[in-house]
Image (tube, rainbow, N blue to C red; front, side):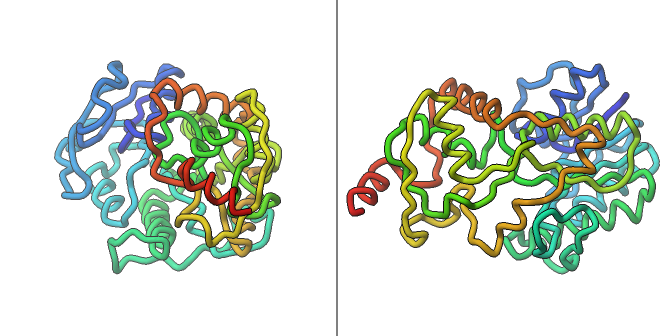
Length: 316
């Protein structure tokens, strides 16, 4: 199978390319050529820039499928489709759970989406989901039964640039009293990046259309359960200490207000039936811990610093 990946050297794209190459696929990467130059020597490389609309490198060539990892704006998707035309078989777009309206637990791929937005290119909490919804619509309108939409939840694993699980793995490994600026019973859904990649490649192999949730782990968990699992894989013991939410810096890793909890309870049934694996959370956490230590545990820029957490816990 010949697969074109728009992106492919960062976190999710990297996992997809790795999985595709393992299956023997012939992979071509379309990137700006600024990062990951030493990755995937077996893959062909085309250089372009989606922000400036430089798709000249896609003017020739044919592929059985394209995986669009780096499309965030309708312009990105529209220009890529214009450049590729009918020289690709299936167009698989990596979307997001952010396309959905807020609904109850167990929601599936038929859940109502937020209204698509096309009049801005500013990515924010308010526009990210609606822009992704517009991208979905454009892919489906252009390719019809040759369109596939994958909507990941929170993705975790080695090479994660957003540091959600990494923060808790690192913090739990230190052991002791752990400040949690949220409620221990908050549900959490994390999908291992390698499971997401396996689903994507399997959907291409099976030439399967439609939309699919990529959420995990297999067993439902909570913030307290996640922190405890992270401690166990590190051989540490922790005491979780809930602290007021207003003591935390903004965008605290994996912590959500209660109105957002249903978004952590999406149904993975359709994706599981299509081949989404279910890596245990303990395995994902252990692999993130090993990767983080191997890279020297650089500053994350999220969560409490050890000093701030110690001062907060001392007050209680």
